Image (cartoon, rainbow, N blue to C red; front, side, top):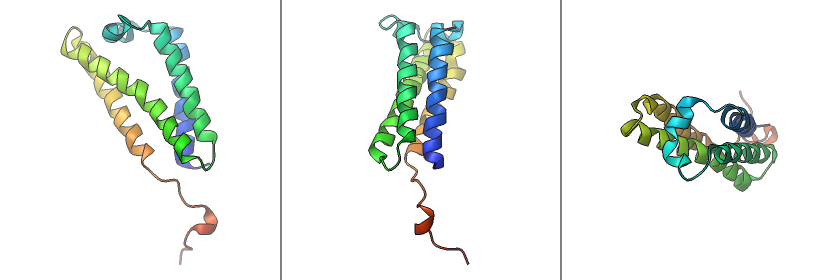
Length: 133
């Protein structure tokens, strides 16, 4: 398994765990408060189950070999909730909850990292690589 695909699987499973255990099962006060602008329209449980579904989609995409379009969809599945969290925490930090600035920075940086990793190529199979001297 390539590192890029392993990244999809491991982070996808982490996303599913975060959604199920950290949002649905035991939402933290800071998370709930930082997402107040979103939870006016979408309940926190729905957001948590969305993390679970998108995480499992990303993990499944990482298990597929030779399917770059499905893998790209897996990276989108990882970036969407992280980007949503980054935007929501940034808005909260700028308005009613200044303590959310750290979460905004962390989720924003992670979203950028996902975009960078998504653009990396899988290495060539061993038989197609140049031999070292």
